[in-house]
Image (cartoon, rainbow over all chains, first blue to last red; front, side, top):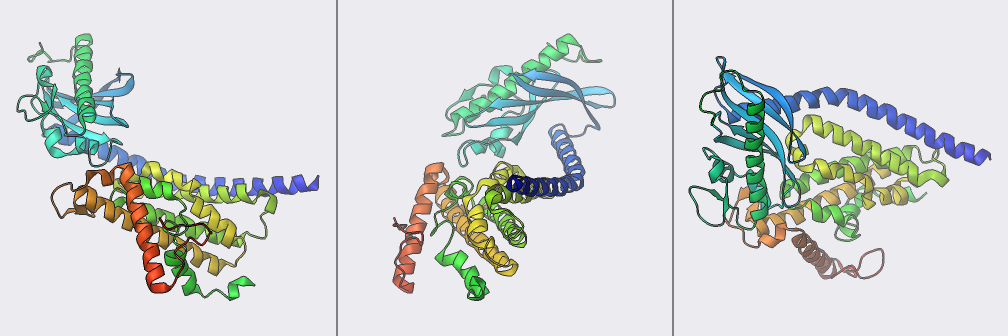
Length: 194
Length: 214
């Protein structure tokens, strides 16, 4: 019986030591991590709608079954745009993104925050040329086309599913924003809302 | 004691060449395929493993007489998991861009066969210094192998090396896909064995018996 006791004490001591070391590390690194994450997020938000001094979250929403957030960007008290954070189901991962939408529901820009798409193919959703295509597009032009296009969204060759996923994520974001604004019209939000 | 016979330099070259974890022992091939789509990813993973392995070997060696043999495996796993968690937390705080790409794989280091096998085969039987050197050498071997596989795959698949475009096209895109990982490792393993047989008079097999060379 004393053998069982020895073994138990042995493992308990190891677990306790590991616990102490891990909590100490966590206490040291967690504040740094949280601060950096917040700064990164703010930077990503500001890059999408340049020239605003105030971007604040206004509503937590559910978009396509996933958590999303709607941010309102204002400048001198006027709403200049919205940013919707949502998640789209890609080919092999969930693609987290930010979609900047103007008050008349045109896309102002998108950013991919994280994904696990196929390296060399689907990971081009992060590429500049792909993201740039969304700029200025309205709901009607958010359609994925294989081959050259100027009016719609050109698919990444070999990664049509990832391209469609991002496009759907953008559309869902615009839809979610419409729902939000119909429910609670933003002050001064009459500027072009159809 | 066995450790007197080991010269420390030999322990390092052992890990890099004659018992290279990936090319000779064929251990931890799973991460070797998964993360080596580019030189950078392979390097970062290699550095994380190098750190964890050295620290685990040192710790296991220090406590080798206190750990009850009956529970040594859970004890080793706990030690490994502790260091991996530390690596994970530190990277999340101080190496954000690397962590974004590697975050998922870092936690998997806990179950890398190469780490527990060195703890069991070497560190549990040897003094601290040789154990540390063994872990470091094995870690270096793993790091080198990952960088090499990453270089082959990145060059063949994306036409670049360490993110710098060289060809400007994707010559064999398949090489960055999972299947390409097997091809790259198989070819490099063959090359490793060929060099050993040709220039060092080895048998070309893996030390664990069987035929390692494809």
